[in-house]
Image 1: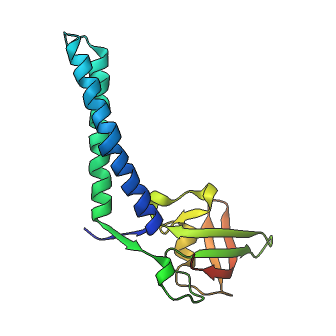
Image 2: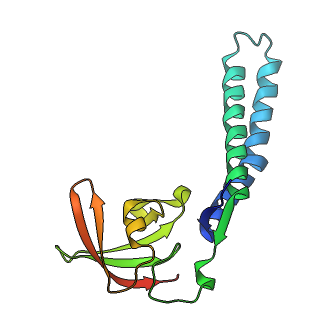
Image 3: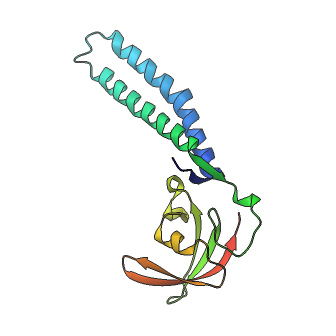
Length: 158
């Protein structure tokens, strides 16, 4: 399986979630199952079935996070010498050539993407168009509403 790029912050967030699931959620669910079992007949015990369903979800999420972290290529953008080239993890200011609207995006892994926070996946159309380009270049991005041209204004490693 190929390595999946991830920022340091993204990996830290996944590790925190993994710890919470293992140290808090898993014991809470085991306790809930034990309490529900003590109530008797398991066939008609809704609390027992709900707790087992939660347990299944948590165990699946633990496996998913462990797999992602195991296949992650964690990239610390602050350790890469800064230049004008757009790379994974960089924060980019782009200007819409038609409207002069400026936007700031950070190129991150799939799990970290949050457009409202200005974080876009490296696999998104905008990121794919930007990666490898340099400050001053104009890139064409295909969007649902058609072609949009952006000029790369600044690249930062933060």
